[in-house]
Image (cartoon, rainbow, N blue to C red; front, side):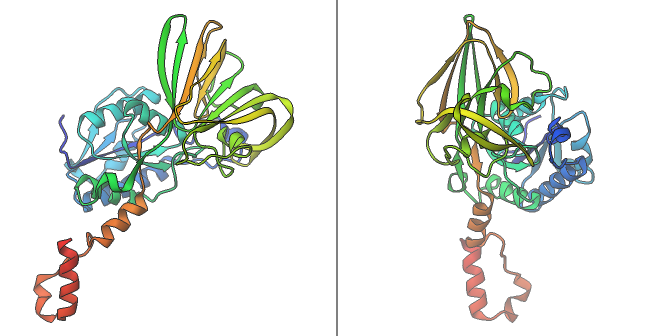
Length: 353
């Protein structure tokens, strides 16, 4: 299927916010009904604001199908394998790009946003937080998200005016002659052991090093380690590295919502924009809080923090820009004679901008 250029994509991860950290922390689950409500509000607002087509990710749980009920042919599904894994989001992001989607709205946490970026590195992205740890995405109402996405898709707001290229950790793994490229949007953890298991890290004592692109004291998750020692903001160049496990200093951090741990660290230091950090030897790598890849004793990992991630859209800025240019105001011609000249002048002026 080939999509119209006046289209947006909504990628809602049904697994987000449901991992094992719900069992060992004070995390509040994000139900399917909550996600469906967000998706439906986003669809309604996008169609109201003028997009031709809304593309939804197919998923095993039928979340997309339930969200699409009643919208008719203006909602279409991105064809792709429904494996119930992160590959669903990665491939859907790739296909959304190929089908000409102007904006992607994602529902999930840091891991979901990473999956979108893996499939479409510079995606024009509105990231709605529905995950466990939400450092990269933020809480955005679906109505506002759908409206902002449609304003950009229809050309009434320029993407360049309301989006900024976000940081990412560019990771190159050289293991026994095989090279792999990967990325994280928030943090990369070097973890002891070689068992992926449930992916989420629940024992902080296994972490030997953190490299963070976003490290703020208000964060929850692995990036809070760096954020409470040597903070660096979302839009500041470079990152932070923290070496854990030894040293007299310790920091107390919320690795999961409402659950705190004390960690000893040896040192913390800033990593300049584009500067390479190399780690040698056997380890497990956790990307944005989730264990993902084992590196052998002969392997090495190089990491760089760069502004090479998705183009993150500022939804309030998009709506404000549209309002200041009169995008939400029109003149009812049938009432023209009963409207005062000054009001007509102001309305007409807004209409022309």
